[in-house]
Each structure stands twice: as C-alpha cells, then as structure tokens.
Length: 199
Image (cartoon, rainbow, N blue to C red; front, side):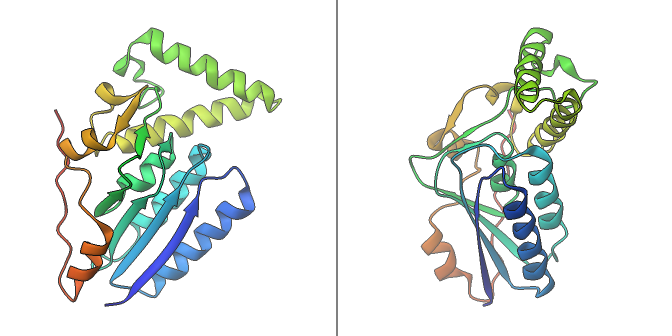
C-alpha cells in the first residue's frame, strides 16, 4: 500500500495555501493508493482557497482513496475539505461549524431571508475591515459555493449556524471509524465509502 500524508492547518496566509495546493497536486500525480489529509483548524480559511484545494482533491484518480482526519473542530469553509474524504475521521471532541449562508446568490430562501441577510451584513463588516467592498462580494460568492458543495454531503438547512458535534456526525454516517483501524485493514483492498444520510 502506498500512503501519502498531507498536513493542513487552516490559514489566511496565501503562501501557505498555495504551497498546500502544490503539495496536493504533486501527491495526486504520483497516484498513491491512499492520501491522508490531516486537518487542524484555529481559524476559518478563505473560501476560494478551500474551493481550489477541493478542486484538486476531486481531480484524483478513482483508484486513489482519500481519508480526511480532523484533529480539531472545523469552521466554515474548512469543513468542506473534511467532507471531501472517501472516509472521514475526527477526534471525539471535534465538531463542524457550518456557515449560515445561502447555497447560492440566487437562493437566499434556503435559510430564510433574515438569516441570510444577517450573515451577509457580517461578511460585509469583515470586508470593510479589509477596506474593500469588492472583496466582500468575492468572499460571499465563495461562501455560497462552499455551502453548495457541503450540501451534497449533509443537510445544511438543518445544521447551519451551530456546532455539529461528533455524535451527530456519526448519526449522519459521516464518520467512518478510527484511523489506525483503517490503515491496518487497507492492504490492497478498497476502502468502503460511507453513505451520507440526508434527512
């Protein structure tokens, strides 16, 4: 079995995020049997950076299995990287915090107009701190796309705007088990793919 481990820590630093993209591309080009993406978060990464990493992950060969391991709670866009795994592992103290934002700019009713507008105002406030309205629009479009992709794995309408703990993620069949057990049982066999439970 060939295993490639990549460690990712949430960040706002473009150089680090670009280096992660390069590392992932190089790993995928070697076509390992398994890629282990080890994720830790202390902040929410920018949505467009996470979307770019997700695009690279989705470009891998079908034969390459992706295990995503969360070693901390994950916030906002970083949740998408964990969800992208064929198998997902998380420390018991971990949780996801799904952003409260519409799945698209046109679909503001997914969470209700008030909730969506409230979140947009928060996004705009953050962008004003960055001194540009254009970045606010770009950030919001990135969040729309991030949440849209997350909705393929879990019911965002029910879960957004709060912590989704380990036990609830287990109920949704999003957590596959322990990392050591996965690696021990891999051998030359394919990993089972848990089926997300959409209520």
